[in-house]
Length: 80
Image 1 (cartoon, rainbow, N blue to C red):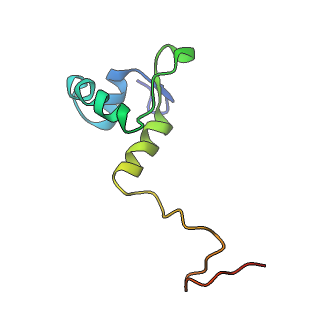
Image 2: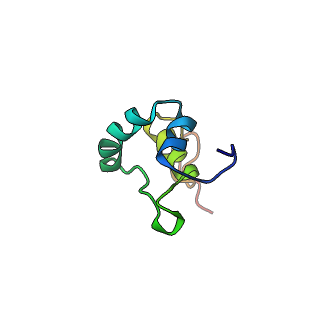
């Protein structure tokens, strides 16, 4: 597997995540119900790695807050 490949098989995805393929296959049903990216038929049934990584980052609280830009750090609206 190329380290910079974007579309991954389940085995490649498991390797990239760091788990055994069987463990990933067992988890995919539950993950899919939570919004894990589905395989793309246009790319041989492979999953888009950046979307998978973004899902995992959200799942583990690693994405920044999505507070509206119009609210300042002090909580006051800063409309122009």
